Length: 149
Image: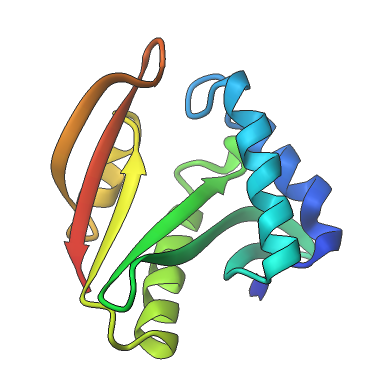
């Protein structure tokens, strides 16, 4: 079940982040993610937790890049030992559907991802618009992608 993020999900989301290190996130990104969660909590930004059996197994959010027509997917992740179980697809589809329902004026969606998840997002219609070698840090390229909504 996809649920809105609550402050009580903070520790579980940090655990999800840690389960994806070092392949998908660098240790240096943890402070950025914690700061992001703080903004979600203070400003009630749209961020979601996917639960199975009452346990957080994935999380991710959305936001406006250029109001009102360009949105973005933010900080999406699935618990490391559950990759390949279609939870990432469920999370991505749920966020795209949320955008369609709540922000119908959005025409395009962007994501900054890495070389490790580029092919995953391509399955949802995202296309690469820019690649930055080591853009997130040594060994973790930044891949900017966009899709029509």
